[in-house]
Each structure stands twice: as C-alpha cells, then as structure tokens.
Length: 453
Image (cartoon, rainbow, N blue to C red):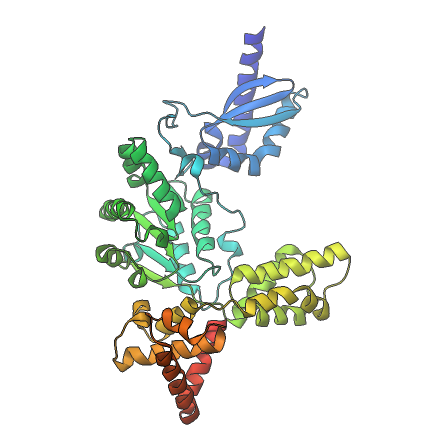
C-alpha cells in the first residue's frame, strides 16, 4: 500500500511538472523545475528534493505558493510543502564530496553561497552621470552570449554604498532570468579565499580549480580582501588567466582602482586593468533626487518635495545611507500615524545627520584628491617633491584639517609619518593660495563638496 501511494505521488508530481512546463516554457522549466524530485509525504506534508541550497531558497521565495496550490488542486489532503537539499550522483548534481553545486544557468558555491538580493536588479538601479559607464558595461555583459573583449575584465570601483554590489547582483539576476545558457559564479573575494583554503585543507584543490575555471562568467566582489594574501592571489591569478585565455567573462568590484591596490603583485594589478575600469563616483544631487523618487514610488508612499530635497542635500555620503534615512522617516510616519513633513524629518534624522557630518575619514579625502589630480593613492603618503604630487598632497592635508577632528600630528601620521610642522606648512600654503587665486579657491571648494558628498 505504501509503495502504491509513493508511485501515485511520483506520478502526481510529474503531472504538476507538466503544468509548470506548459506555464513557464522549456528554458525556465529546464533551469529550475526539472531538477526538483518528489521525496516523500508525511502527515499531509509533501517533501520535494532539490540539488542546492541556492535553488531551495530561490524556489521557496518565488514558487512555493504556486507549487503548493497545484498539489492541493490535484489532492486536497495536502496541507503543507517543504524542500530538502539532496546532493546526488549522476543527476546533473555534483556529489557530497564536492562542495560546489550547479544550479540552473549558474554555479553557486555550496553552503557558503552569497545570496542574491532580489531588490538589486537593473530595473531598480537609478542611472546618472556618476554611474552611467558602470551601468552600461554591466548591462552589456549580462545580455551578451560571450565575453566582451574590450570589457574583460570589467573592473568596477568606488566607495562604500555607491552601487557596485547592486550592479553585480543585477548581472546575475539578468542571466538567471534571460540568459539561460551562461554558467556563472558570484561570490565575495573573502569567500573565494575561504573556499580556496578549505580546498587545500580537504585536499580537493583540483575540484576547486575545475569549478572556478569552467564557468562562462566569474564575478568576485570586494577584491581588496585578497590584498596581502599571497597564496590566494596566486590562485586567483591563475584562474584569471585561464578564464581570459578561454574567452570567459570576468567582473570584479573593489573600493579602489587597480593601480591603488596595496600588497598586490604588479602582474595582478596589470591584468586587473586590462579591460574596462569603471569608476562609480559619488552621487550628485540630481542622482540622489532620482534615487529617492524611485524608492518612494516602490514604497507607494507620499513624501513632500521639500522633504525629498532636504534628504538629497543632507545625506550625501552614499546611496545606502540615503535609502536608510528615507526608510527611517517612512517607518516613523507609519508607526506614529503622522504625515511626513520637513520638521518631523529633521527631528527623526537628527542623530543620523550629526553622525554623517562627522563621518569623513582621512583615507576618503586622500582618495578623492588623488583621483581628482590623477595621482596614485600611494603618492599621498610618499616623499615625492614634484609639484604635480606635492600640491595635491598639501590640498589633501588642508581638507583633512578642515573636515575632520584630527590633530596635525594624527594627520601627518596618515600621510607617511609626516611631522606636524609639515602639515601646518601645507595648510597655510593652501589658505594663502585660496586668498590670492580665485580659480584655485573655486577648485578647492569643489573638492571640498566632493569629499563631503
């Protein structure tokens, strides 16, 4: 009797799969539903098996209600549904001994997978002059059927919270939804390092190499985390070369440009800059307005224009903090049953704005000034006396005194252990130039706004 019931449930699942195939088409069915198998039924609950944790999360998030309703349509005694990850041999799924599981059109790194955020899609990315190049390149890669030579690798860099990870996730989501033929891995550099070390420890290095070098697209977030990790750098270098030689696409994000990476071999810096290096700049006022309006539309709330303008003018550090400020205002309005207005907004964000005003750090200033004058980040801490380097360094010291609470000695320490008298000389020099040269004063004022933005 038990065997008969099992056979009936297997047949029923086949019927449901047929319905899913008809509803979603061949590509989506083959990528997702064909890999789900009936496992068991107990106490009114149907248990289905899937080959990876990522697939379990994706199906649960997007198709749980649909699959349960289909079961209940054919059998009203079914009360609940659950999924279990089962790694099996010879079914398009890798074995338990291999820590990487293949899913759909991509590859995800087992239990240590970086989950994709469903909010981070191209549709939800607001494009403006600071991120237009990075967006266009990311979109082109996601739509391409093969690597784009002039953008291989695509190196996205910029400060925290400016949208680099959003673009990485957008590429992954697009390929999952539209570009089924491309296999990919997306993970952070930190997890790449962790899995490399685990492979060494478990004597599964060959499997590690095969998995990472067999994909069509490799995406690694926050590559700066492998700085100084010699063995991980070496493995990344060989993986990078293999993929490039085989015309596979690489996408990398970082908080600085390839040339400014510390404790990274020159040969790796050189290869990282081979393709397209796209700087995701700090947001402009117009872009912040666009981001807020897009977010407000998604939230379906009314926010007065003066509040939107206040937020765009006040929270200039990054997109993450800007959206966080809006979320806080809207949440307070909902909880307190009060309408959103400018006075309430200022009161709600009082502590946040106070913190934001103090959050400018010396390395941030050094990076902005170095980028503006096209000198390297290392020049900020060097002893080079050429005017093309010394003047930007003096401006950076001046801005550090103007925008941070640090002492002259503390500032000097972060500029290559310079003496406090050197910092004082730099400050006085810039102050004098600002008074005597109007154009120079305007340039320093622009830099000040950019650093605070």
